[in-house]
Image (cartoon, rainbow, N blue to C red; front, side, top):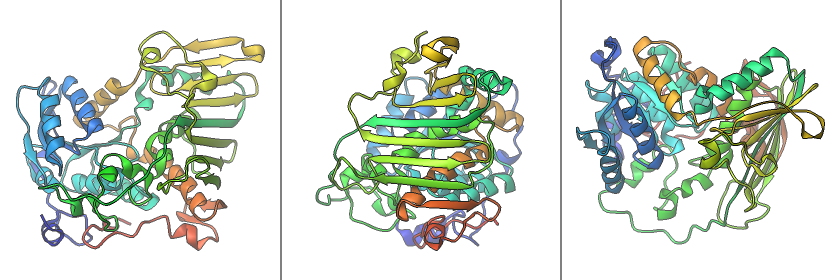
Length: 445
């Protein structure tokens, strides 16, 4: 479909376009054992994994939507191992949103499509499970939150740490006051990596709509490397590894600190220190967020080969990581004890001088309970663990740090009430992206 046809027939991404509500989905009351019917929009690896997990928790996938035939094939084969009924295959997400038999939508597209697709879904009466980061910029995160409330839809973000029992217990320990007063929180995303060179443009694959894949982003020639995960390296589509992976740790750290408000001051120093390649995003990044009662720091790398995320062996067993070289740990410095915590099943320890362990708990991944929570909330209409209002804070902090870097590694002051940086027009211009004509998001303010 050409962009002019997408414009003409769009449900409502663009302000003023018609809203098509699915009355059945919007008003349906579920029985205790009734299956929730779900469509997958974006059939890459993560989308296939999430949709299969929801099937295993009792949902039914009715539609697969992707612009790429190969990904539709892989999703159909992968889900066929756990579901007898073949989902309908479509390339136009508007067909998913208009389908009366669809109750909820999984959005696992590249990041720059997360908010536009999710907003169109809730406008059409669908509940949404959207992968992190749920928005490419601060403004679109606000718009998704406002749309979810306006249309009374459940929006669960894929920051599944909030559904992990060991993290809930860690929160209880922090709230009990056992670690003492916490004035400093350190968040790490110290991963390995390699050079990224884009190379020459490639021919657009047959039957693949590159224009729609780009969506709100500026037009550029097709590159196979961009399509295959290289989009993480460019500001037009992503916020770098801070948005891709680091948001998990930032969100969990915010949870442990009581989901306080927005930081008043944000600073960031970042650059490409190791790799002189074609990426736009930094390979070393250090950010600081000053809240009223504590400071949170975030450190990122994309090069040291000896840093590792928590392994599957650790996540699935009663084992704790070797914290010093754990790439995705969180450290809370209390006046009495220090808490070190891993994401996605890393567990946690409370320690004192000499590394003496005061308390600890092993952890398990939280994908299954996060899926269970979403399906339960679709049925009961209660707020999910990673509700869009909660997720909006971590998503905004990701973009605040990147903005501070992109305006020259500056320190910025933020007015949460006005959603503005104080006295920096260049930073304020990056709160909202420029949307290509035909792919604008409606303003719900």
